[in-house]
Length: 87
Image 1 (cartoon, rainbow, N blue to C red):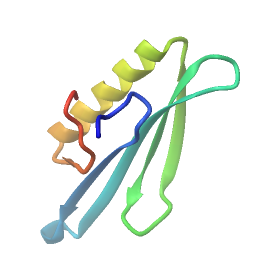
Image 2 (image 1 turned 90 degrees about the vertical axis):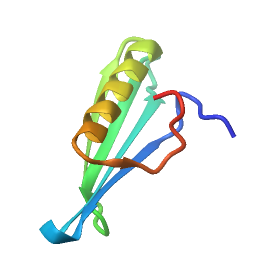
Image 3 (image 1 turned 60 degrees about the vertical axis):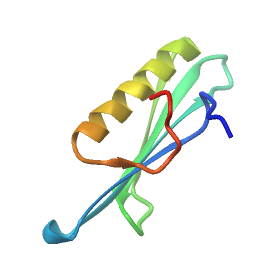
C-alpha cells in the first residue's frame, strides 16, 4: 500500500527511564473553502491530548509543512509508526 499526501503520520516517543510516553499525529485535510490544513494532535499516550490546525493556501505548502514537522519530531527522538517512505 502506498502512502498518499492525506494519510495521517503517527509518531511515538517512549522512554520508561523518564516516565515518558508521548504520541504525535499529523494529517493534511482539505477545508470547506478550497484550502488545505495541517492537523496536529499530541499528548501522553492514553489521553485525548491537544490539537492544532494550521491552514495553507495550497496542498503543496501544507504537505511541505507536514514533512518539516515530521523531520523535526524524528530529530527529537520520536519513532514514525506509519509507513513513511517519502518523508
